[in-house]
Image (cartoon, rainbow, N blue to C red):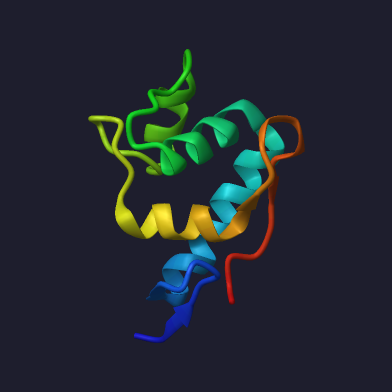
Length: 95
């Protein structure tokens, strides 16, 4: 397993990070509100997804059935997402 250091200082499996980047980048383009909700859920563990966003994120395997976020996914999102609300963007999480 090849490891990669992320911008938030954590280390994750490089293949997992690369796969998540594809899914999250696609989400940020096709369903930006779901991308926003994912970022908010990673930033605040008490945040609950709005409307159908929870279903979209569960189907993409980005959140669990109880609307919690796996630590590895949280690390990737926290390393790649920048900005807030209308200027929220997705970029590389790699350090």
